[in-house]
Amino acid sequence: MQELLLEVKDLEINFYTYRGVVRALNGVNLRINKGEFFGLVGETGCGKSVTASAILNLVQNPGRIEKGEIIFKGIDILKMSKEEIRKDIRGKEITMIMQYPIAALNPVINNGEQISEALIANIDITKNEAEKRTIELLKEVNIPEPEKIARQYPHQLSGGMAQRVMIAMMLSTKPSLLIADEPTTALDVSIQAQVLNLLKDLVVKYNTTILLITHDLSVVAETCERVGVMYAGDMVEIGELKHIIDNPKHPYTRGLINAIPSEKRTKLQEIKGSVPDLVNPPSGCRFHPRCTFAKSVCKQKKPQMLEVEKNHLVSCYLYDGQK
Image 1 (tube, one colour):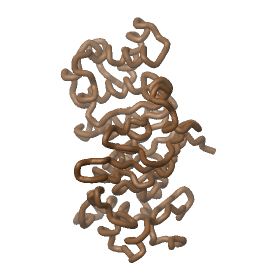
Image 2 (spheres, rainbow, N blue to C red):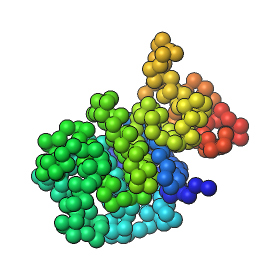
Image 3 (cartoon, helix red, strand yellow):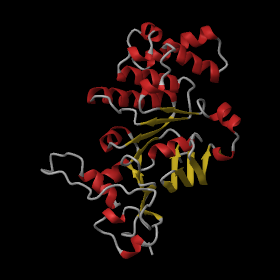
Image 4 (cartoon, rainbow, N blue to C red):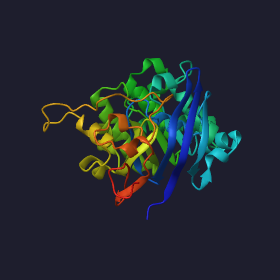
């Protein structure tokens, strides 16, 4: 039986802006098991990165966590003090690869010093030991001439090389959970494949768990074991990769899959309409204005998440038990 590592329960997050209250997360539920490669998919603005920030309790003003629990190894992170999270969780037990590694790295500190600094801050290690370990880490992420790269600065690296440096830094403390937020953004296809293969290899080597955030279903199909699909702040479907790809249940998931180029389709199928403005989100199921199967109840009440097949959950009134 798989061991539960992270559970997000009924998470609601609002952002208080000059335009009004942005209802970014609308009661999100999520479970990730130890050693799992879990994918979180959805269009831009659906709440994927906000969910990741909340797991590290890094939701910034004007954002506010209104409700929910984030249980990591049996402890609610949201009830921990800032000092406890900084000392015991963030950067040690849970680390995060940002979307744009060159922007995330410090431009005035060389690459090696940044990795060494992360080691010294989180592990009982001397400066000399940290420097040696830094070179080892750069070798493990397949960086050629690691000593040279360690002396260079982030602006001297390509996007793919900077991403490898970021991965080395985030894995330096051997975290239990690594959050990879769009790790292949702005990389060409061949470099994307190298980065994804590297992450898969490191999951096994470090016995870590990865939460991969992406809008690209093809990236998920190459890497993940289970997938969660988000739409406009709601989790609409969760299941094993094979179930999601071969037998999608939610109309939104079907739309995403049908929009992927394929030899079987001569014409791409778009999802009509656009993502709603979350200052004034639709009532009930937030997807109903774009859904060809929408019924009157869809406009009135948010559907519950139901298990329609073994380990396959969906939030939709198309399935039995929804009233």
